[in-house]
Length: 240
Image (cartoon, rainbow, N blue to C red; front, top):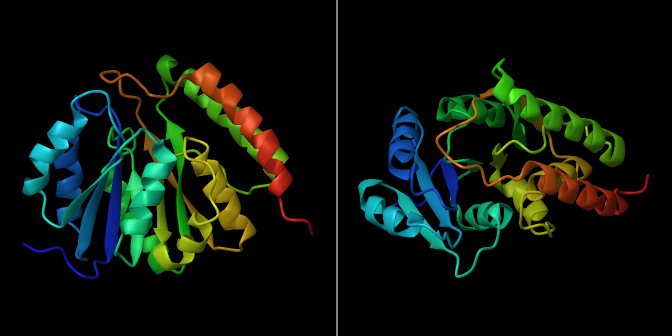
């Protein structure tokens, strides 16, 4: 079947070293998409993995209708992967989620509904299971939120959730201004969207930490890197 010329939704799946969970989780995402009453396309962006992710997605791709694969020739970062997906997307709306599904694909219809209400950007606001393994995530998330509010003056509770949906024509001008390619991309796109006056909605989403997959986030060094980038980035806050 040929890809639709103008799908309603373009779902972007950034991929980096996801070989161990790829097949199982893509099937879950695909089932969620099949429940939608609107047309859609899948855009996979393979960010030069060091495991067998590329080989696996090349093998799986024929089984997913309306899907495309973008391959990076070098590792660019999760943010650049999502930006490339948005630029390649054909949908009226587009969004991305992390393929580890620590936030469920079942939230996709809710995010689309918010866009249909007139919002330009819909951001996932993570809440966590009440257990000891989640304590470090909760503390770091709340601390980061306070810093973002303080330094960047953003009224967004969770800029870093890997679950964001967009009205494509509204977000493209913002994407063109983005300089960050890595994890800080999420904060930058939220900040620039807010400063540009886009309508932003937030949806609570349950975050369930996967213990069968090594996280690509290194909590302490990544947090320090975030703090440095926020401090530098605040110089770009528009003057009133």
